[in-house]
Structure formats: structure tokens, C-alpha cells
Image (cartoon, rainbow, N blue to C red; front, side, top):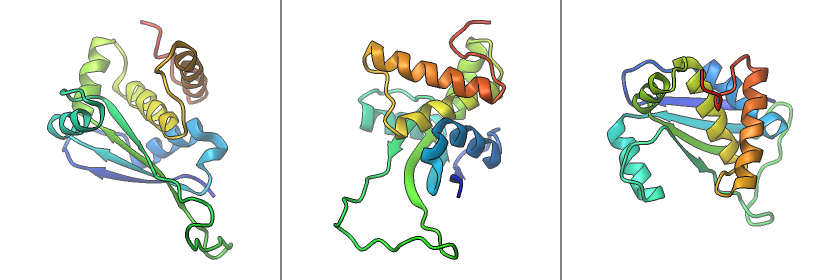
Length: 162
């Protein structure tokens, strides 16, 4: 069973196909992707700014926001058991991506738009499974994982300037 990805587009601008987003996130998550569902919402700067202000206290649009799904405590609900005919797909969380911000960043950083999208999908997916970059040790661990995943996907190190 693989990662299931649903993409909701709220703006008319280029975004990679769902299959690419699923491959990038699935590679980042590895075994943690199995039987999970990821929602991706592609939004404009206004919605990105509103969500960033509300959830992160930053009143500006941002490239990607990650919202992990709440875990159901063990024994708190009657969760059906997965079978071959009826696999249970558990929500992983949602990514909210603003292509307007990604495009500007890619230009400024002299990166291809596709490579920058891949990086931010990987980055956001890793946040959903507990990676963070608030302190230097965590930031180094997350950066190493991102670079490794992106290399496997055929993209250059996003932290090296071209």
C-alpha cells in the first residue's frame, strides 16, 4: 500500500502533477507513507498569508505550511481493521503550498521551479512526521534528510547556491 495524495488547486497557475507530488512525498516519508493519505492544497498569496498569520503568527504569505493529522488515541475509538479487500488509509496531514511564493523564491535562488517544488514538498512532508528545524541539531538532521531524498529523486542540493 502506498501514499495516497489528494491535490486541491485553489489558483490557476502551474503546479506539478499529483503523481510527482506523491512520488516526492512518498520518497521523503519512506515506510511511514504506507497506508497514509496526504492532502495538498495549492493556494494564492492571500490564503497563504491568512493561514501563516493564524497558525504561525507571521503576517505574510509563505511557501509551505504543514498541518499534521491528529492521531486517534489507542482504545479511544472503534477503528475498523484493514483487510486485503478493504485497506484502511489513515490521514497523515495536509500541506498548503503557495506557488506564487515558490516561483519568486526559485527565481531569487536561481533554481528550477520543479526542483524548488520538489524540495518544499519533501520539506513539508518531513514536518508531518516530526522533523523540525527550530534548533540547530534538528535543523541539521532535517537538512541532511532533505538533501538525501532530493538526491535520490535526481535533484541537486537545495542548500548550495548555483
